[in-house]
Length: 605
View (cartoon, rainbow, N blue to C red):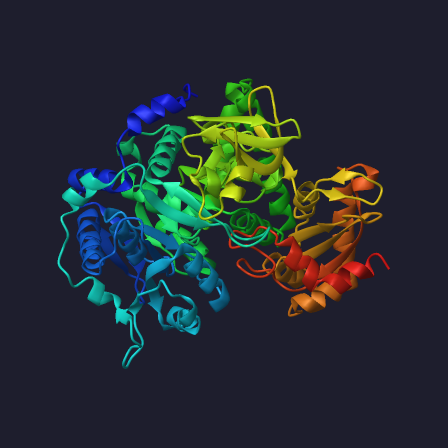
């Protein structure tokens, strides 16, 4: 691995730049390259070149200017992953307004809070389903003057509501002049936190934060701009999340990725097979589902499954030797042989045969699963960060160490505070929370961003996250226990999709375990229980025996006081962006504890 740049070196490379300025450079160099794609009803593709997006952004900028949108004003965006998002967001940046994307699942009450807090004056919505929710709280949004709808409902529209086509009907603005006027100090976006620890906070990210982060990510890739140009990417996570925004929006506008827009994250797997991406960011649940699906399919042929697992085990050992620099040529030849006879076919089966970089983040991924992907030839690595660091804080994709989340990214210092908290500083640290100076002061102390996570650094600077500072379980006996470590081990049980460890102020640890909706039916069919629902399987003695055996095995990794003594098995799927999980599948512990209060108490009765 080459030496990583310092903050001052990255500063020098991005001096004076903004995303609009960098996009104009891309448009000059690669005007005819495909930038965005969306699938048609018949399985074909609508495509938009860099030049097309430049023209559409110019029309958005002209429309916003015609409606007196001035620098610093907020433009609310609420739409699924579709090409339109990119030119509406970019057009707002060109007039130095601040685009604010919010989660599509937001209730009217949540929309009211976010839009009012941001003081959004213009909103661009996808269709009537979004408009209906906004109209329910419109009287409580005094700042909101104009609402534009990409697919408006039929008939007369309410006052102040217009078709988005009207916004695009003012000609094209002079993007060269507008781009020159943009400043690194401009607020590029507001990212609202998911609200797991209270009301969402508006994370203010400047153009400088964004271009600094995009530049350091490219350095982590160890690729040039030209080498990254044209990489295929699937956009499927909400644009309200910094990881998706950085990967498939800002990265695309700077490097010229070819982005396939997937409007429904549940359709990701077919998109992977169709697009064959070279770059993929996925929350852990994406990779857990691929892992569970492959292993469940192999389970139908135990002999073949054992052969495959033996090959994976051998590949893991060889990868560990490669990391240590002790791999022999014989081992490397064995790895190539395994890839040719087994792993290459599996990658093709799940649409990852062209992958150059696969990234997971936003929540922990069990190290065993990460090693499994590396073994079958998927270069999966874990990244760590937060919205307040414009995404990344640590990441070492090309020298990946499973169980760790990488070393400090270029241009950032990472340290462990006296109480074990991970702290960091660098050019990607945010400008503060909108209208919340006291929260900002609690988070940035003496220039150091305080993450709220407990971590450890090894001798090579690799970071291991122990747990959330506020989520550590403290038993009634005073023992501090990491729920994340317990949950990672429990999720390795083949039939389990989600796990939530319980035990704060209790005599012992217990868990809520959720059957995997894909793996459980396959197991059921292979064990004479085909057709049983998840609810029925959760009550089945044979299933419970399998789960108990898995819990017993997982417990062997932990001290007696940390082990799971009881569990409740649930036959309902926990869905992202619900009262149980954030949009990136982090546990909403308060929501889980509230919904399953009776089940939890039953384990301690």
